Image 1 (cartoon, each protein chain N blue to C red):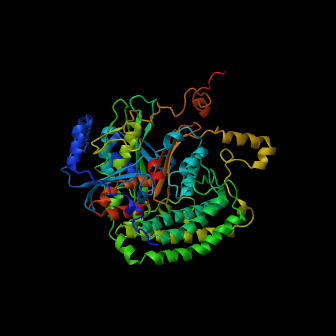
Image 2: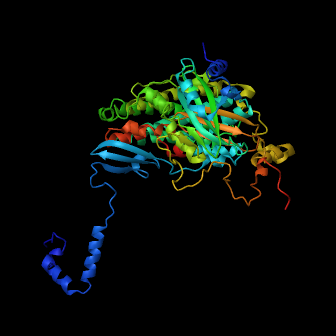
Image 3: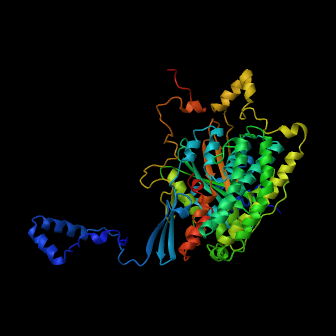
Length: 448
Length: 174
């Protein structure tokens, strides 16, 4: 049997094509034709073109707000000359949630959930930064074990933040494997969070004064598992990228910034350190007993995407070092000290549940705290921690009410994103995408 | 010799005399106030002085105090000297009727968006700012939401009344 290759169409009768003359004939005969023609003409002459678009020699490209390469909801309006970027204008605010306003009506413990949603790649750091701010205002002194447990969690979140950022730089330069590979190990970190506080992404972890419950043995086992498995993976991740010719060609020299400009633009965190400034809040203004630990600050020199990548990898190694030390310190604690997981702050820290059910006093405190009826002492405090992207600051003013009078978040992302136009001016479009991912722009942190 | 709060205070007073006021040290952070006309001069001096060297702008924001007539809005700068590792907080007050404050964008590129944010929420008019427009809120918004006169919640709800948050008298019993 013979097969008709053009799918049966060959058997259809030939179509007659109407040539121009016959169209004209039809139009002349049809009484409505003039109207049709008029409508047709009128649309043709009223196409709204942006002003100056005919003379314009550049192309406008909207990178975002919902572009896969932006990894978050924010927009870049790029003016392109071929593939070169002439200028870039950034627009933020798509997920602005008025956190600072909301915080003025919430008792301190309810603000923790707002901080989760700033940099959601490392929310425990935000949670703990907020708790440290409250503790500073309230004068709560945390026991060493709480400090060390916090450090374990904060460094785990730093790793989870950096591994996402670095592997996404890989994705944007065309290498998906690394991303998929380390993603499994972020999962291990999230399992630790889950064991400690019950949630994974927006953690709401800890309370003012410490943790809501002690770490379970399962949590420590998971930390041990992570400490045993992750170094191998990180090494392999580095082997895949660090000396990879394609990756180096794509990232070296892309989006560089000098130390001077970076400081002037308010860069902090890995992005500043990649430019050669060794500013780290953990060392400059130690909090949560960071002074008890031995670690280095990796520093770059050129401030380009490659240096940012190297600095973040270096920091992950340092974080592992810190976690190991902290874990050892926690394990070395003996007797009553090894069971402490919160400070003695009865006005802010919820009493044990079994006491709430059996004792009047505990029930009253529980009620007072949950209803947010504890009055905060008046004061003005600025506290900052080293977040995944740099200095996360909390400027808290209390006038003695039950909620802050004013709370301002210093969000590192928001501050350094404005340098993006300077970083990408004259660069290729493909570089702009990598610069965006290597700055680790988190929309949640930008918009607050 | 490490820079201390006392040295900073002395050097500032030597330069500006009694124009600077309200020196405080809440939680160890040197805080002071200047007339708003002087904000750039003070910032510039803090930046250039070979001992002070406050060359990093950590944070810039505003606070609204509706109960202080003539000085309702405070613009707050947090500065950091990264060499001696010391921070300070510097405030200028302005009336909400004419909230003009000079921009710090010439000194700090980072001030650009922080001032836009402050304008967006408090309506501080930063004189000389290259691109003073809203940044987080929509352009059509015609008020400044973080000012205290814009309440957060439904005002008919008495369970959310200020009194319930420890401010003002308790509402009359229903």
